[in-house]
Length: 159
Ligand SMILES: [Zn+2]
Ligand SMILES: [Zn+2]
Ligand SMILES: [Zn+2]
Image 1 (cartoon, rainbow, N blue to C red):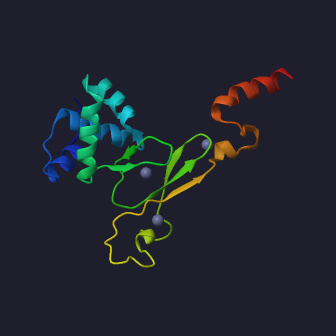
Image 2 (cartoon, rainbow, N blue to C red):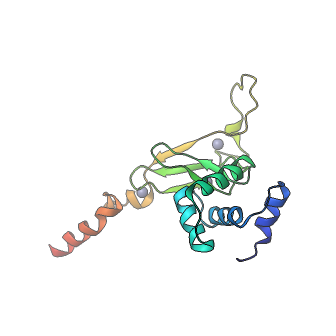
Image 3 (cartoon, rainbow, N blue to C red):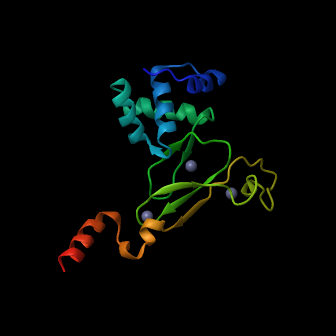
């Protein structure tokens, strides 16, 4: 296994017992932001061999609880995981192709965390999702979903 000082350090700082599986899960999340648990399992299996989906969930759960990984779950999508934590950034999600990208909190440093009235709560996260259509799906020659693109283009060429 490739040695990875940054990831090792982050686990050690939190007093998390370092295992090959946890390290591989953290690396999978770091290498592919907004990856699903299934995706993590695939990457980890390719890297260190067999791992059960339950072990992936356990490792992800621990990393989320320790604040090393953030879990987001847009409506209608499986949970996604990323290692960009602590900045309260939000996500842009395409309704058509499902592509998901990071977007910084509105303006300045996390203004969404400053509620008009916090009702005495200590707020640490604002779950904001911007839904819409991505540039690819907005392109005039590409109104259909990506899967339809090929057929559309083929039709155009044959006429
Ligand atoms: Zn799209
Ligand atoms: Zn993100
Ligand atoms: Zn915000």
